[in-house]
Amino acid sequence: MEDQKTLNEKLAEQTSKTQTNLNKKDKLNTPTSSNDKDSCNTNGLFALIGILIVVSAIGWYLYFDIKSEKTEVLTQLVGVTDEKEQVTNELKELIVQYEDMKSDNDTVNKKLEEEQARIEGLLEELKKVKRNNSWQIHKYKKELSTLRVIMKSYIYQIDSLNTLNINLRTENSAISQENRRVSSKNKELENLTENLSTTVEKASILRAVNISSIAIRKKGKETNRTKKTEKIKVCFSLAENAVAKKGSQFIYIQITNPQGQVLSGINNSVTFGEQTIQFSDKREIDYDNKDLDVCIYWAKTEELIKGEYKVNIISNGYIIGNSAFYLK
Image (cartoon, rainbow, N blue to C red; front, top):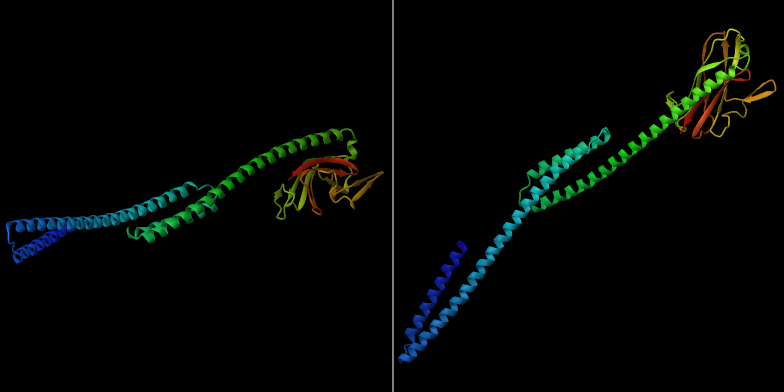
């Protein structure tokens, strides 16, 4: 309104100057007749109207041009303000999304917390940015885009871990089922051994019970993986037998892989009468006709393959017990 008032004042001043000049001209050129005087007055009036129209047009053009520039500047300021609020809200939303992504994985949770702290730092910096600083706000918009890309990578990692956990649970379930099957088979084999032992003279043979066959790692912990296996541990109890031979004797273990090959059995053999038996390892014991716990370890000397391994416990040429275990 102040700009319009100034323009109106200039128009009035210009009009006044124009009228004064016309009056002076009329005085200098006094008509000799009434017709000449009327003609001059008419021409002056039209000239004045023309000048007023031109000046008014220029004034209105300048007024609307200034008003348009002000409107454009105001619109830009409003737009920058809206962008700052939008970036602020989206950063806050990212913090919530990172919180929702947390799980039982402590390693992933730590990384998510680091990203949350980074976003909170950006929010504090953004508070100090002036609303009309479009360059700074654009910089934070780029940071926001980078954070979204990082979040997508974490989503992919978490999905991959979830898929891996599902696969591991499925695999563990399958292994558990296989272990139950092997345990059941071990029980059947143990029962078979007991049944077979009734067909031979009890006084000439020992009987192995409570048989356990497991694969162990370097640190002595149990494993079911071929690559981690360093030894195979076979433990059992020799049952009390009042008529068995006392004293020192050897107990042999024969371990066969899924292909039926005896582990380390090429150079390890023993003959009982006309029968030659390959074995994996042996141990000398001192039997005193009482229950005796025995463990024999076979140290890995060859690559193992996936599948079921069978173990026979041999004494004096007789299989006195057997077992089985599974490696993957």
